[in-house]
Image (cartoon, rainbow, N blue to C red; front, side):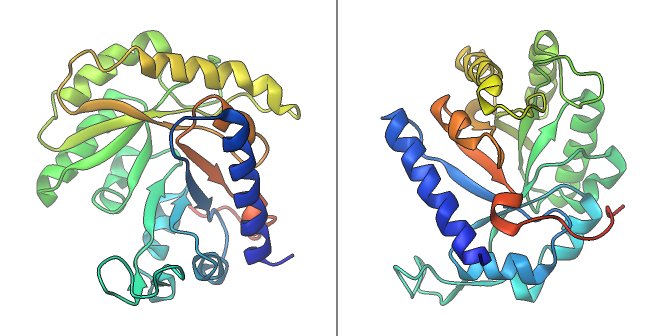
Length: 249
């Protein structure tokens, strides 16, 4: 199976999951290029993928702006929406981010993994230096897993307050979740439902906080995530296959 074949199969599965779910939000497919070569990402873009995600700041920085990742226009509209023959993929940073590496990501990608006030401060400082507004998601650790990142649900309001205080340079657009690992995707359903319910409680009138996006669902469980209201799913191996090579720094 080629990357184009894999991508087509994933899209068919997404469409089937949306049909089963019924009316609900649109779903953005993010192709996760973690440890994959640029050639693999380029093949996915050539097959119509529009959103790319990376887990490591230095790997992201190396791939971002690579001329091989300036993709062809949508084959349905070859001229593109702005009359251009090429497009730049939308980038997502979906891994844990150290504060001292914020400079590699801010202004270049939607950041899905904000989970502490010190990172909020670092992101805001970098965004202020670039005179940009950085969109972010807050990662929530609903299962209380000590080995995983994410803010505890009861600490979420305080973190949203911290983000809101940086309203000139940060904008929170939703929540993100990585459920406990399990071979049965149905066991992730309560976690996906809980994140949806947490977002539904709203932003509490905080400036620049709008919890409209739910980043949840990966290769093994994304149909269940879609059923529970995911607006962004993060798919790696189902598109690109096994990840080669050592883990980047």
